[in-house]
Image 1 (cartoon, rainbow, N blue to C red):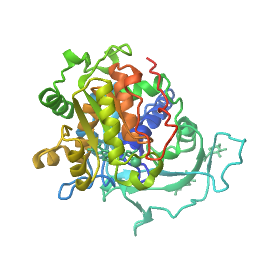
Image 2 (image 1 turned 45 degrees about the vertical axis):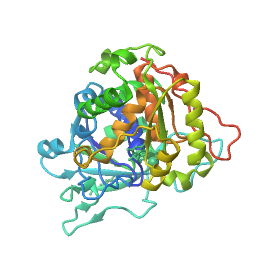
Image 3 (image 1 turned 60 degrees about the vertical axis):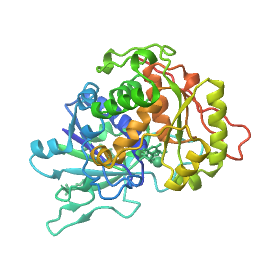
Image 4 (image 1 turned 90 degrees about the vertical axis):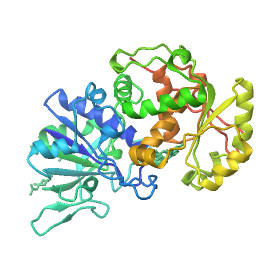
Length: 386
Ligand SMILES: Nc1nc2c(ncn2[C@@H]2O[C@H](COP(=O)(O)OP(=O)(O)O)[C@@H](O)[C@H]2O)c(=O)[nH]1
Ligand SMILES: *[C@@H]1O[C@H](CO)[C@@H](O)[C@H](O)[C@H]1NC(C)=O
Ligand SMILES: *[C@@H]1O[C@H](CO)[C@@H](O)[C@H](O)[C@H]1NC(C)=O
Ligand SMILES: [Mg+2]
C-alpha cells in the first residue's frame, strides 16, 4: 500500500525534513503488519525559493537527497513512480490532519485520533466527476477519491491503526502531516532516519570542491571521513576536526521580524564572528545566509575576508534554491567551529549533520545572541544513538 503526505504550504524546507522523520517512523510501524511504501512528496512552491525564472515545482527528491540511502531505512519511491505503477493519478483516500476544535485542557494530555468535521476551509474541491482536486504537489491531473478530516493529538504512529483497520484504500495521503509529532524524538529510529537523509551526491561534490578550493578543507585533513553507506558510518563524537574556518549560518529575511528578540544586528554578528575567529585561531569564515543584497553588501564591508558560496546562473538553474541551500549547509557542517541562528531549522539540520560527521558538540551547538539578549543560552544538545 502507498503512503503519501504533504505539509502545510508555508512551512520551509528544513521543517519538512523533520516531518519526513516522523512519517518514516509511522511507516516503520505500518511495516510491522503490512507491506507499505512511502511516496516521496515532490518539492515545490516553497516560500523561500524566490529566484525568478527557474522552474521550482514538481522537483523529485533525488535532486536533493540520495534515494538509495533513504531506501536503506524505509522503502521509498518518487511520485512519478507511484503514478506509473499505481494505475494513474488517483489517491484513494486523503486524510486532512487537524487538531481538536476544543483544544486540550492543560494537564490532561492524551494521545487520541478521531474522524471529525473539517475545522478549516478544505483545500480540496470536487470537480464535475465528483473527484477531489487540490494542490497535489503541482500535479494538476492528480485527483483524490475521498477526502475527510481527522483530528489528531499524538505521535506519528497513532494513526497506524486507522490506516491498517479503518480504511482499505491502497493509496492514502496524510495532508497537514506536521500535525503528527515524533514517535521517539532523538531516539535510535530518529537518528537512523536522519542519517539516511544523505544529500544528493552531486551537491556534496560541489560543496567538497568549494571547501578544497576556497577553504583549504579536505576530508583527509579535516578527519571527516564519509561513508557512502550511512549504515556503515559509525564515527565517535570528537574525532572530526573540520576545515580551518569558522562556519556561520546567519538567518535574516522573515527572521528579522519573525524572531526579533534572538536575531543579531549585522554589527553584532560581525563582532561575534571576529571574536570567534580570534578565539579559535581561524583566519577564514564561511557565511551561509539568506540576507538580501543590501545586507550582504554591508556584511562584506564589515567583514571583507568573508567567504560565501555564490552560485553562477548556471549553477542556480541546475541546483535550484534548494540545492544551493544544501551546499551552504554542507560547507557549514564541515567547519572547525559552527555558529547558527536561534530557532532556525536550517541551523538545526546543520547541528545534526555535524553530529553525524563526528564533531565535538561544543563546536556545534552555538548561536548568535539577539541584539537585546542578556542571558544567551546555547541550543539544547542532541545525543546520537546508533
Ligand atoms: N542558500 C541559503 N538559503 C537559506 C539560508 N538560510 C535560509 N535560507 C533559505 O530560507 C529557507 C528557510 O526556511 P527553513 O528551511 O524553514 O528554515 P528556518 O525558517 O530557518 O527554520 C531555507 O530553506 C532556504 O531556502 C542560507 O544560509 N543559505
Ligand atoms: C476506526 O474504527 C474503530 C472501530 O470500528 C472506531 O471505533 C474508530 O472510531 C475508527 N477511527 C477513526 C479515526 O475513524
Ligand atoms: C470517505 O472516507 C470516510 C472516512 O474513511 C468514510 O467514512 C466514507 O464512507 C468514505 N466515503 C466514500 C464515498 O467512500
Ligand atoms: Mg521556516
